[in-house]
Length: 118
Image 1 (tube, helix red, strand yellow):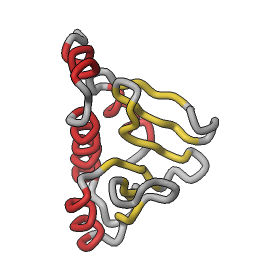
Image 2: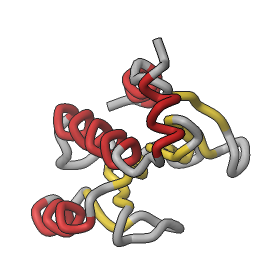
Image 3: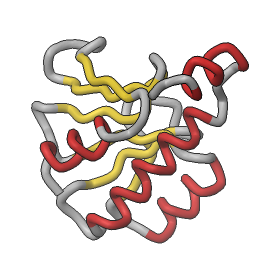
Image 4: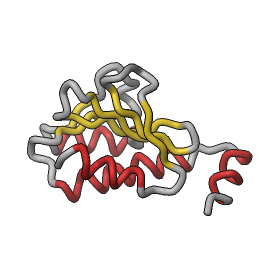
């Protein structure tokens, strides 16, 4: 899967923006200011995604192309290979899962703002 496909998929999600808060080589997708996904443009073979902790372990056990995310809390973040044994469908499902993990933790104010986005 290529970066442009991922970029378009992420930006199509409600309330999602992109930016470079960690430097010009790390593309970050956020929903309502909370990180959903990161791609290191210097090494675009990996995407970092938020994940429910038990599911993260299960994914790592079953897919060699999924491991604890470098420079992130490995309990909640996976890095997923874009060039390995991970199907495009699973990558998109994991982006969806990351997005859902982020929005389910919104406080009431952020949730109301999110729900009011057209």
